[in-house]
Every structure is written in C-alpha cells, then in structure tokens.
Image 1 (tube, helix red, strand yellow):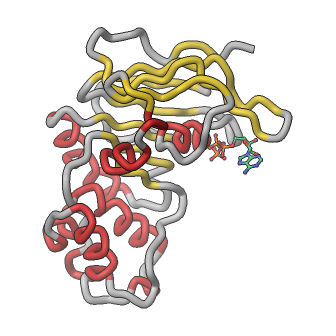
Image 2 (tube, helix red, strand yellow):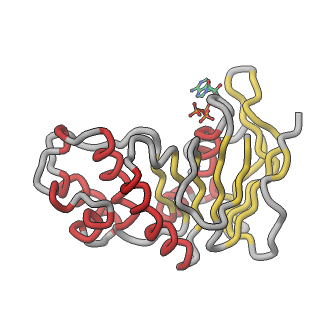
Length: 209
Ligand SMILES: Nc1ncnc2c1ncn2[C@@H]1O[C@H](COP(=O)(O)OP(=O)(O)OP(=O)(O)O)[C@@H](O)[C@H]1O
C-alpha cells in the first residue's frame, strides 16, 4: 500500500525521507512515504490515534530504524552519523522527561549545559520564570509541558521534532509558542509537529497519515 508523498521535492530540500516504511510486528504502519522539507518550513502530522505520527517522528529523529528507506539531511543518510543528527535536533516526545526533585531552573540548566543558552530567558519565553525555584514535582501537567518546551528557547538547532507539543497547555501558553516557532523558522529552522489541534504556525503544510 502506498502512503504517498508529503511534499513536492524542493530543489533546496534540507531534510528528505525517501520511500520510508515502518513495520510494527507484522503490520505496516506506513510504507512508500516521502518527505521533503526546505529551510524555514513547517509540517504538521495529523491523523487518527495509531496512524503513525509518533513513529514517523522517531524515525526522523534517528531513534527508530525504518524497515525500508532512509532519512537524509543535506543529502547524507542520518544513520551514517547518528551523533551529528542528535546535535542538530530537538526532539520533544510525549514524555516531559523532568527530574522531579530538581527545581524548574535546575531541570533546564541540565540542557543548557549540553546545548548552551540562558535558563532565565528560556523560562521567561514559556512564562515559567516565577516558578524557577519550585521543585519540578509540584508542577501541573501544563506547567511540566511548558518546562519541556522551554528547551526549544535555549539554543538554536535546525530541526525541531515535536510530538503533541501543546497537550495540556492553556490558550495563553499555546500563543506563547507563536514567536518561538516563528523565530526558529525565520532563522531557517524546520519544525515537524504531530498534533491533533491547530498550532500557532503560519503557512504550515499538513500531512495526514
Ligand atoms: N513498540 C511498539 N511495538 C509494537 N507496535 C507499536 C509500538 N509502538 C507503536 N506501535 C504501533 O504502531 C502504530 C502507530 O503508533 P504511533 O504511536 O506512531 O501512532 P500516533 O499516530 O502517534 O497515535 P496517537 O495519535 O495516539 O499519538 C500503532 O498501531 C501502535 O500500536
């Protein structure tokens, strides 16, 4: 079965996936899938529960090997240099991956030590500056999601892969993502997000799995 092409092939494609297939057990989650994205572009992955959105994000992140096909970054297979691919991406999964005993600021400082960037500014970008000294274990679910999203505001990376980034967020918090996403794209960054609800992203293309 053919799932088709996500986007036409721009001559200046940075991220390309060719003929991707993913099997789970004996079942094909998808096959024959092509993705092609230029600098500054945004792609929304939509579709029913179980359609394969998270699976596709994990393949694009290099965390899961496709059964067929390859993911290319600037023409090179990401499997050839997984460490280089890991450095160029920010992957936010369903899990917020916080350390409950550490404060909000300390949780983010862990990532700032890896990637650089200013903790205070990143917390401010998601409206968490007033909670900087609270232990992460007392955060509400929406606040935990915002703390995970604060990683995006730390330091630039060309590829953002976001799995349901707005789950649990109130309307104001969703709106705070707008300038973050716009600045990332204006700097040439690519964003691919799996989502069930509209995101504050101008001119995003949509692919329904
Ligand atoms: N580790 C696994 N082993 C076997 N099957 C799996 C595994 N992970 C996912 N699947 C299956 O692969 C399919 C795609 O799952 P995936 O999580 O990618 O869907 P999704 O589109 O992100 O769904 P949702 O909207 O519910 O988040 C589902 O049928 C799921 O049961």
